[in-house]
Image (cartoon, rainbow, N blue to C red):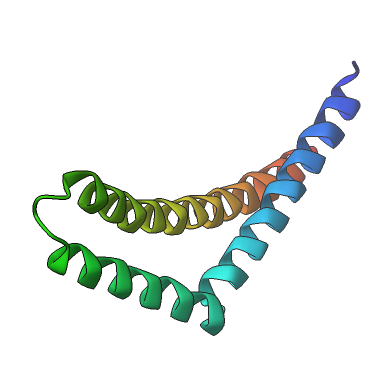
Length: 98
């Protein structure tokens, strides 16, 4: 593969990462999704706190649900950060190509 083709391929991958980052940011800023995360986390936490101690499996499932919500939020935040990094890398790639 020629150097210009490699640069173009890298640029395409970076542009895709930038687009994914923008979409993830829009999701994180979406009020409906933010409200859904907040409501679910509050509901699962409240249920976990009042769940019978004898039902350890049920309490564990509720705790896992709370943790999964956090992991989804963290994943979206990583995609946003990757998009920002890709934007910087693309800018550097364009400047080097000049």
